[in-house]
Image 1: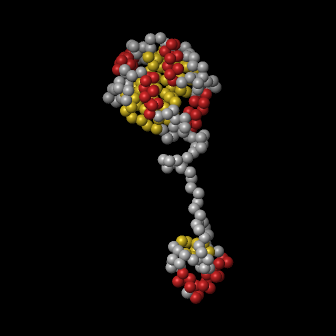
Image 2 (image 1 turned 180 degrees about the horizontal axis):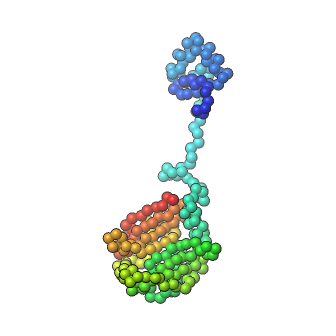
Image 3 (image 1 turned 90 degrees about the vertical axis):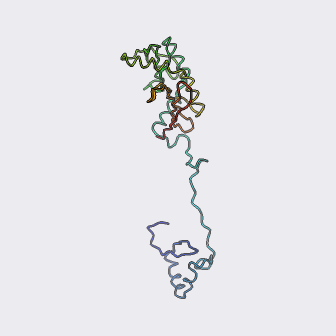
Length: 239
C-alpha cells in the first residue's frame, strides 16, 4: 500500500483495506448504528457493504533458479571482469593445450611455468606464456589466441636465486600443466583462462588453474597439487 495515502483504513478479516473519500460517508453511517464495530475483526468473511471479499492477487515474483537465486538472461548483469572474459573467449580459437604445445616448440627443452589469456590491444587476444629449462632459465612467449602461432621468445631477467628456486619447483612438480588443467575442468565445466606453477606457504608446488564458466562467465580458481594431482581448494569470483 502506498504509504503516502491518507485515506481511512478499515479492518476486514484481519486485512487492511484502503477506503476512498466516497466510501467514507457510508462507513460513518454504519458506524453510528454499531454494525461496523460488530463486523470489524469478527471473521464473518464479508466486507462493510456486505459483499464477499475480492480475492487477493499476489504480486508476480522474480523467476528463480532451482538453487533459489534469481535467473539472469545470458549477457545481462555481467560484471566488468565477466564481460571481458566473454569478449576474450568469443575471439579465441586456440585453447591452452594448443598454446602450450606451440610455446614448447618455440623454446625447445623447456616446460611450461604459466600461461594466461590476455587482450591483445587492437589485435588478436594472446596467451602470455612462460617456459623454463631444467636449470630455471625462463623465456616468455606470446602465442596468438586466434592463429595459435608463437612469437619470438624473450629471455626473462632473473636473479640467480630466482632461477634456482624455479628449477626446484619444476623438479618437485611431477604433474604437468595440461594434466592439472584437465583435473580442474573435470570439476567445473568451462574454459581454462590461466595456469601457473606456484609454491604454497609450506613450499609445496601447486598449479593455480583458472576456469571460466561459459554459462555465467564466473571464474573459479583451483589449487591442484602438483605432486598428487588432487584439488586442494577452489574459489569462485563473484566480481
